Amino acid sequence: MVHQGKEFGVDLYELETVAKSHFPTVSSVYGDAMSNCDRAHTGTDSAMRRPEEFGGGSLGPVHKAYADLHEFVAGLLKDTKTNLDDTASELDKATQLYAEQDQGAANELHRLEDTRGKPKPE
Image 1 (cartoon, rainbow, N blue to C red):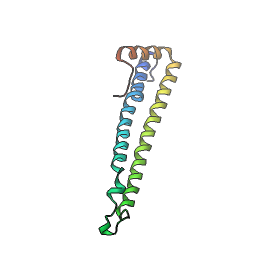
Image 2: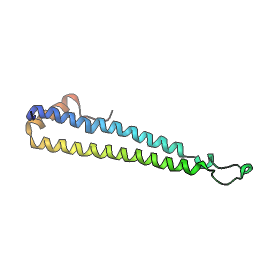
Image 3: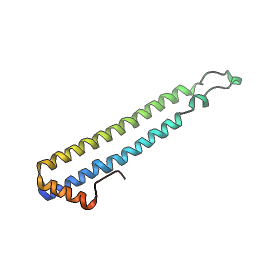
Image 4: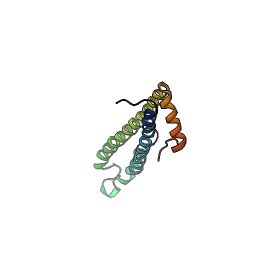
């Protein structure tokens, strides 16, 4: 059975929680992973540079493979974070749109926000 009014307001609050708390919390983990990945990549040029005793100057045979892998992983992390952020934004918009269409649901949504608090990232 399709919910409406007060029951639908509870559903909307749960959707708002996902949009404003769960998705941003997971997204922040991906942001941290991106930072850690970039930090690990910093300094690889000097770490992989061959000493003069071994031919010097070049970055060695592993550097390109590592750089390619880093770019691939960093791209996946960035794309996933972007998708999570975009999904959260659109889910929040949908929640607000539905609330505008059902005053009883909107009233319950606002009551829940007042009693439980507005959802926010953990």
